[in-house]
Length: 312
Ligand SMILES: [Zn+2]
Image (cartoon, rainbow, N blue to C red; front, top):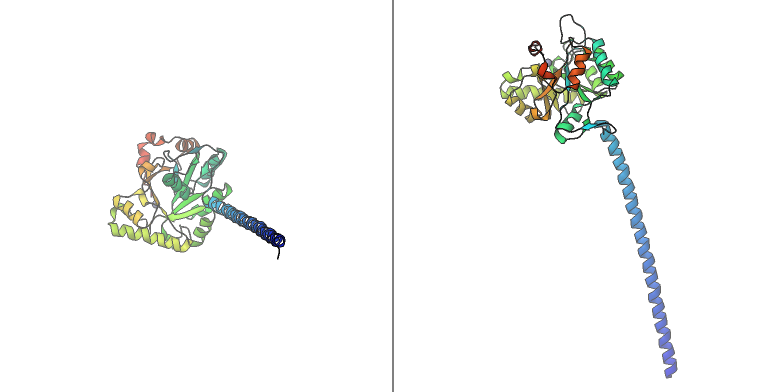
């Protein structure tokens, strides 16, 4: 082979090799960009999945725990009026029973004046997690679980789409004619009226030893949880009576928040297991109702007569 021929062959080999390297390089680049595209697509589809998941979650959370927008809000250094009712019916001389027409007038007042009725879960999140609530918020509670709560209060609450809570004496369910039945409790609980505990037998907790307090707090909670198929986390103390052992027993048996019958708006400084409530009786005019839910210090001028009323 002559030198010229050798050189030419070497050149061809070099050119071929370079071509091959170049081809590989381009291919690799193509493959890489393909990979990147796929990864990008994967990321995008994951993002889409995530956001659709988030959407579902937001909706679900909103049902249980509403987001309050477009209204003035308040934070948990402030107080909230938690109204305490018992029976919604007329009985001459019994101020604990608020006639249906009077009750409807009060609910209409709340609606017409832009009030939001909170669930106890929402009040708890406000008190404990500082989740803001509308400045004009109230909580509606009913003690004992009288059947007129279903017959007279429930239709009005539904009419205005209001949230409320009934504290139930569980020994009375399906046994005592004057009280709510298990079917009524289930229906109300599914339609905006939360059912919570008022002990097994309307027990004066502060007069019971610790273990008996635990028994009635846990017993009533178990009955309601079985009936409603959900966690029961709140309690109204019968006669508003509690002591330091009651607070411990309520914590130990899994309650998150509890109410007395002490007059005034609820504030976290009272302790989340001994919150005050606003008493509304058959004797109160709509003006007095308005005053009690718009003045956080209304109780300073509450008559000593009212303080003597034996709340059940
Ligand atoms: Zn009671």
